[in-house]
Length: 100
View 1: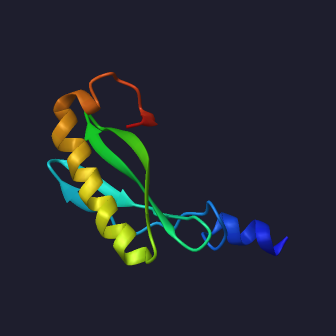
View 2: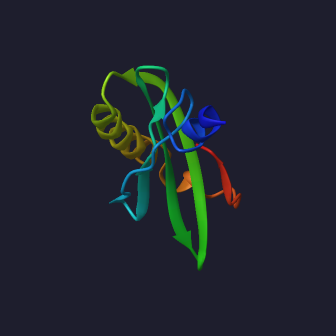
């Protein structure tokens, strides 16, 4: 049972730990690196308010870091890159929540 709670709250493999979101180009990037058994995988969400509705794009990358802080920093870099590369098309399909 303890293993279940570790995974749920970020202590076990595959668990993620949410961090404070950062604004960028009208969006919010929320880092949530995943614990990958001794390293941290880059993961997060990008959200944007459009016409009073919240749209979300999640992303997970293969990049891993030994420290959680480094994974958070790189998640923010990747989130900004996704926004820059996709522009308005990131949310233009009208789907509320999907992978980026």
